[in-house]
Image 1 (cartoon, rainbow, N blue to C red):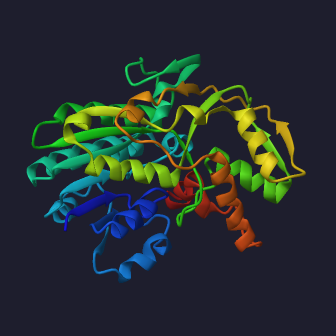
Image 2 (cartoon, helix red, strand yellow):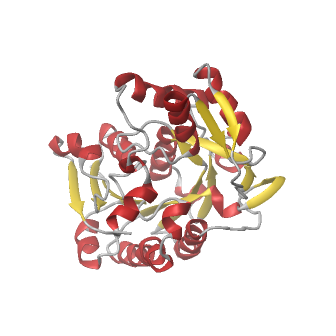
Length: 328
């Protein structure tokens, strides 16, 4: 039985991925500080093939302990959206880049065979209407995107015959998770539509690629099991060409599924816009199975199941939780 370590395994993607890997017969160890609580992975703790270690990734002692006997590492941990990363530059550097340095070094020393890094398409920044791919120049506009770019530059050159590295530039995520987030644009729009009967958008002309949280978990598994010759030392955009949408069109998709909703413009501008090609990952046989309509319906079901849910609660927003944690 192969053992997998997921850093940030109790997070939005991690708790989905952990379940999938357990179902596929892996032993799963999660390393997570549990800033958002234990509930997302509580039900997994009864599984004999699951192990939870509560710690920050940059804790060298804990990381050495967690890496013993591990075949593959899926590196999801760190501060994970633009507002959270703008709070404190030194904290972002420590959690997103310094932690990656420690993980990379110890993974090689302990005999890990595969290291899969969760990056982001936001490293492309602003591309106007040009379609970008993995060879395109990068223009990270935020501390979050810059930290992902810096981590990629650490990880990818370390690829070797005995140590496979790959970076997955994920599209903008959406969909239901046991550690739910409502600070992701599709999830936010759906929450606003149901709770407020209106959707407020910043601009609307800007492009974003979108990806269901289940699909990005499947992409991680694909890289864990795929042919090394095709993926080692590579960077892949993760998503689909069909899921490149303008923000205004995403709002219309939400309004089609949740009727009697108004779409309004805000005065705030969002300068990030990127239209991304996913031909490279499609060429090696991976494609998402779900689409934005599936995501909207999945998020809607959260409200159908719990009519009293407050989607603006701090536990659903990374920035709010980080401000609370830092006592700011």
